[in-house]
Image 1 (cartoon, rainbow, N blue to C red):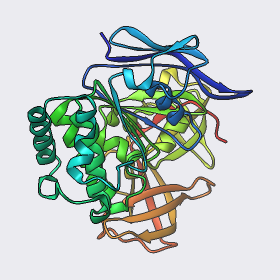
Image 2: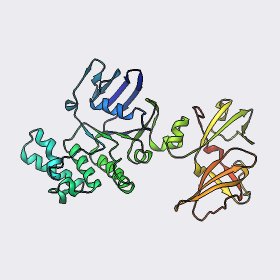
Image 3: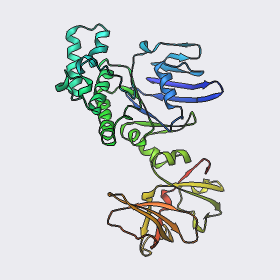
Length: 360
């Protein structure tokens, strides 16, 4: 049985559709991220799961029982859930220990049990030495740990996180996304995490739900989502990619300014006449001269249009001769090509992924 499930979930505000026909099931202990741009419906979906909004269509179930539908809704405080907001919402007049223990005392647990749970969770989040500090005396990362500890210590059935790292700087976000995953592995609480940052979703999640215009575009584990996107939107939102729009004519693919054999493209026989491919930058290789060897790869004469050195790699834009197509590629720091220099562009056709969706 699913721990949490959404069935045809929808939410409208007047004539505006915020969420439409969302179906999703979370297994017990699973970490699922709702990922997408602002306005895609991910936070509205989370608020319906939390019980802050009533759906206008469909239903939400937990442990097989309905907790929300258009006619009735279990109150948030009776759902067995904890939620962490962007602002942390920790009380400035309480110490770390008082903040974290607040939910336990509200449940009127025995003093010894409160202390046992408090000591355990503070040790897990590495704040036991700061138990008597006030929030104003803590860093942003430490405040976030307090919020996490307070949410987890009551042992909720479901943990909800709404853009919890958006107020942190880049280095702290990187640290805290790993911390969130570590805590999940420790407690195995079923978790729904809302973010617009694909790196956060990739690091923390068992599965990622990519949303766009209130609908689910694709649900998959991070590796599958990156390597096998189904739509143009997913391919462009999860990491960087190149789009190659062309036509299939017999056993040949026709792109702007050049043609190549279709034989080694995955599922070539099932391709439509008008086709779009996603090709990741690291699957485009540059050579100063045409290399010997495997001629099954596509090799196109071209030139370097732009370049940027980013420390860990070079970022190039290259253009095949006679074509309007511009391709992004990355190379190691030692693989240097001057702007305007001629290159051979090598593409392994087995790395192309056909995607659906408009080129707009």
